[in-house]
Each structure stands twice: as structure tokens, then as C-alpha cells.
Image (cartoon, rainbow, N blue to C red):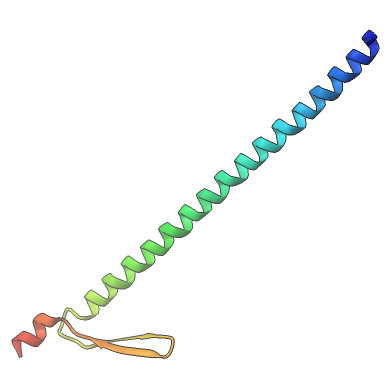
Length: 86
């Protein structure tokens, strides 16, 4: 193999290596971004759940019946310590 062919082969292999490394880095960056977005989404969901429970507790503090509706299901909640007092 003559030196010109060797140089061409090295250049081609170097370009392929750069493309492969670029693809791997891009994939890793995208995966990390998706993980961060998922973590933010899950944290938001957790905060929403906590806020809903806090609101339910606050609404029931004065022995009030608290209606809760989810889709076509409806329930009424009351603090059990209020029921015991009655």
C-alpha cells in the first residue's frame, strides 16, 4: 500500500471515528436531558399530590365535609376525629 492510500485510509477512519464519537455524545446528552425532564415532571407531580393532600386536610380542619370528585366518581371526606366528637 502506498503512502497516499495510507493517508487517505487514516483520514477516512479518523472522520468515521469523529462521527461515531459525535453520535455517542449526542445520544448521551439527549438521554441526560430526558432524565432531567422526567425528574422535573415527577417532582411536579409529587408537589401536586402533596398540595392536594394539604388542601384536603386544611378544608377538613373545621369538621367540614370535603367533597372530592375525580372524573365521574364523587366522595365526601371528613376528619374521623370530628366523627368521634359527635
